[in-house]
Image (cartoon, rainbow, N blue to C red):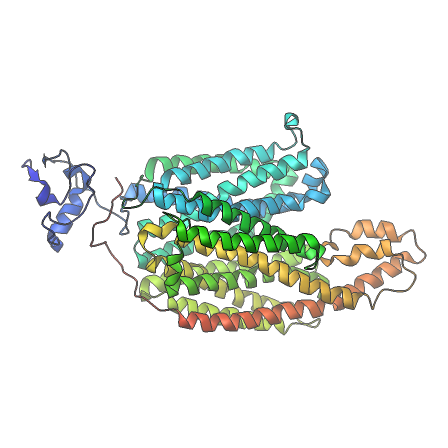
Length: 593
């Protein structure tokens, strides 16, 4: 104690030269020397030439590229979990407040934009800010996203009270939700990347499974919480509830998550890449969103798709010439990243197809009430939660991400096949079995893809490589909803036209053109049909014809999903299983100071 320790002895380096656990002559540190120096930590580096230390040893609790102490680990994970919970709950809790929001702010025709604006902005912000964090560090972007999410939540809750903006209450809410989507995308894109920074590859699945499970739990409890807040307080409370939780998350991340500035990168923002990606993704998502309303052959959809294709080509050209590309195309020369990107895209198609059209099947075909159909979705969400935890333990114990990917694709394939075999005589227990099977499969795969990508991606591109999973899953879900929605409506309109009695005015039948809205419009339809002779009987006849008309389209959707999942199983078999490292890094890596 008290003797001077030279730089070469402790493995530290002068200021601004980096930190490593090697001797200055390049010799690797022996195991006992490494343990000694690890316990010394940064406090050994007290001056440029020597250091005197008497402090208690610092013990690192994480073994990733950024090592954290016990308090730093607890504070960082707590802050990240709260941030993730905010983003997850926000997408489920608000839906139950829809009738009250429409009644308060009016603008029923624009309410869909409350969700669409959030989706557009969150999807596009994920890769942009992930790339910026690869260049400038993650902490301040994460804090900015969390703080912005809190502020925009307050603005959403106060929508309609800003008369000086010159727009009505619903347009204010749409604007604030778009801003909230940008901040939510920042949090989503960085959370899983930070897990990859602070934990070794074998441990990442364990923690990513926990964070992915948060989404499933939010889907289960979010609607209930949103309904309670709306009934007991106000619809505005569904936004204000984010404020105290967000403030706690910001404080925890500010105090405990260390700032680490990446080295050996060119600090150059790819403005051309950002602009062309935005001009590609936004028209694409808008076109896919409008397909169910206007059809694939409508002028607005065709123009938007053509413009998106042109901007995609411009984006590829910009990335080949960028000094520091926003999405380096070289990443996709790695087969694992390419296959995983295709995989999450396909999972996005299947997952959102089931989430959206299963309730429609249960309500429209099986005649289950809206409340009960919502409860029937709970087992699938809980299956996802259980699957993510199992995936985390499998990657940790087996040092393999391919095993849960194969198991998950098998279960998801079986689940979609069970869905495809359902008909009007299907029992609720059969629906539950299919849901649990598919949910377990999705839960096993989602963290597995992230672990696989992070295991092969160079750390200088860890952020954008990780964000690609979220990005392609979002694009896949939008494509799935558009394609499946168009297929469903085509079948439905053809079959429903055969059950409409003669003499019914078109304005009365027009309400049945969109089966997704029939449950909410029953009171209005009863009032409309009461003006006709034998109106209630005719209305019941029309509702009775909805189920058979829906069945053919929904069966086609599930059959296509089953075929996609068979292809996904083959694709997962092609993914190379690179062993996952466990334990401390053995090369020059940063620590959380």
